Length: 440
Image (cartoon, rainbow, N blue to C red; front, side, top):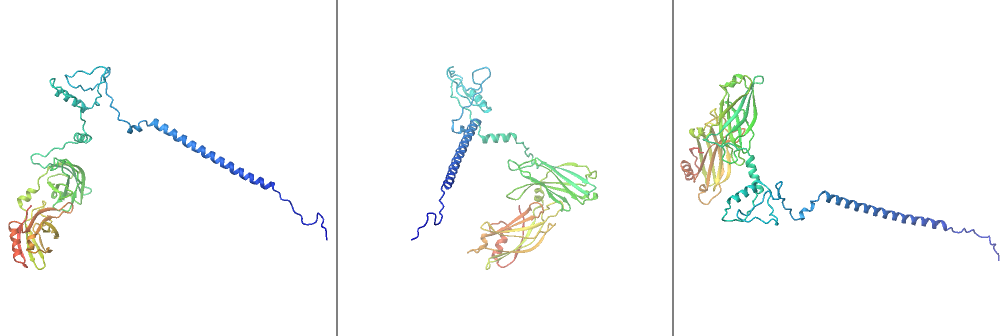
């Protein structure tokens, strides 16, 4: 048996534990110290935020002391005191015969010294009699709406009313530029226009040069006034000096209407034959506005030739608009640009619409246009529930077209229009033509 020496065998090194313990201790201490520092920083930050919020709240309450007045009872008005005396300047007395209040009692709080309260106090003291004492009445101030209305009435400029049936005056200026061969017309203003509405019309001016009737312009609309001011210049080029004598200015003053046809107030006709415009200086003119409807009433509104054919099997009404004659003049050239618009009415309601072409510069237009209307089926006498409305209009490039006259054909019509309708109803599938006078 072999005996080993003590130093024989593998060498085993001892385990060193002191370095590992030191590393763990350092790491734990670092974490603890970091946590403490973080907690301190958070605490300091919270304290700073609270301090700043409290400081801003205090400063805000000092700067805005009336912020919480919404939750407080309303303040009492401070009475105005007369200098050098202890009594109020405005103090209501119960009545001339009532005893004065004792010196120890405080007088009642009066209203602020407004003009309305002064007037009310004077009226109250004047109406009270010594024999019949009355209780004091507090002055009632005007509401905000009434005050605004009174203020508007005071500040709004008054406009003259129309008198003696006059339609007002038109102010304009004329100037001719020789270098450009141009005529400059300045529409300045209108004065004393009539108006149905209390606030006044919405006027504008339409201008054209006659006899060509090609240069048409208009001003802007001025709202709610009888004395509109425009100050608008219109330049017409290509007018030689020798042509000025043959030019006539035709102004038409109208009132704009948003929901219906514009109303014609009147017109001004100003020929340039007697004016000297070659100097280049502006010439101011004023002309009285004349009514336009008087010419049309004296001359009549003309006649129209209409042919009708009723087809009961197909429930169709054929309308042939042949021609018109003796239409009124719509300008100084003695011409018009007429066309016809037709409406088919069933039980008083419009169900179909047709219109002809425009015939330029004529008072006796020839249309020869045919239109077919589908009539709603009815058990008995379909034409008894149907009527035909015709409008003859004068076409205008710039403004709304003007109505020359109108005609109504149907069972409810009167005179020759009703007779024509009954004749067509009694003779179906036949073309029956007749002349009819136009009405307003």
